[in-house]
Image (cartoon, rainbow, N blue to C red; front, side):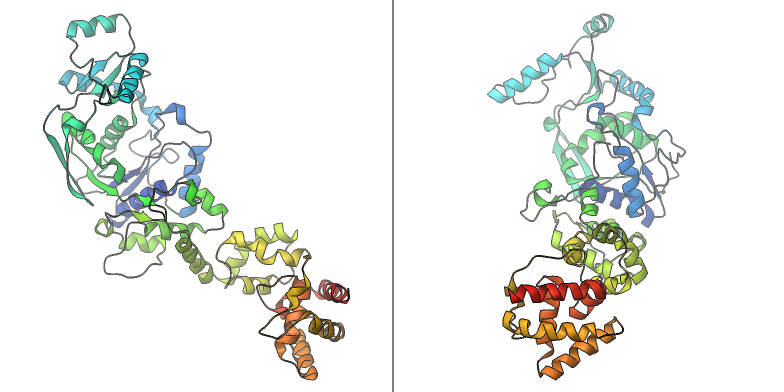
Length: 487
């Protein structure tokens, strides 16, 4: 056990697939509770449910924690004073504790077959039984138990719940919670294959590792008395419970795939930044005390986080709000960091790094909210677009296909005469043409931009588009636009 007063939290995921937003928030709050108190954040892999394990899922856990900057102080990959930190490697310790509970009268051997348990479920469906386990083996005599053990019959060990009264516990978020003991099923502690159940292994390992704060979703509030009764049966100190509000979608229902990406990997694939995801997830069910800010780095969260700021009400996962956070982080990046961020996508879009990389970055950074937007935003720069002539029409600039047919050839001739192909030269050329023709600037810029891009909306105006395309490609596109108009 740890020294009294030292805060120790643990993130104990099951390696069953991607990192869900809810799991990531739980990990984040556990991390912040520990760091805010100068304590330790422990990573423990709970792989007792062997049937649900997914190959590569442990690597996903490591990768996710690393990408968001939540470095654990102890864990399977770095060791620590309470190793091993993988439950399947701790199997030898669970059976003695389960048998200790049997000896103390807080647990019992259950020899019920799968067929009998399945029949109970069927009876529950028919309304002849209230559901759950009927405690059939709870009252076996010692002689009956010894005979069945001697015969080698498979068994599980079940927790013996009180049949009357109530169990009360204190939660740091929800306060005092009371659950009638009659609602508690005699849960399995040790399965017939020797593996502990999730609930039992949690209690044993949390005690063994000196965990002081247990953080989990509010859906576990009703089952917490089961944990407390185990702590009491062993005579162990009960940890501080911190139950977190649910995360719902915009429709008020529990967040699921129907709402959108619900995993960290999925959000990253959509172009969200790890730091933006963490910042937003931190605000799902928590707000800083006496501070109206929303933008926090992980380091800043470590300094201001407190359990008092956790809400009881369900949080709503708003993808638009997450996008706002993401945009704020993108805007705050240095040009160099933003270029490094978009380079891989630019290579995919263009097949190489564009020559006017800095100009392109300057255009995109104020406009991009998610990296996944880039192909749609700038794909026209890499490949010519097919477009209708009505794109040349614009009420604001009083442009039309007829006007474009008149302006574009003159713009093409003027641009071809340039000795330098840069922003200033192109700007002066086109503005000068507008003055010469006694037109508004937009009446020249609009048809040039449409011919060059083939799109109604582009990041940047006509001048930037021409510069990024380069002289040869820009002129070729204007010639194509003229040919379209002449048809």
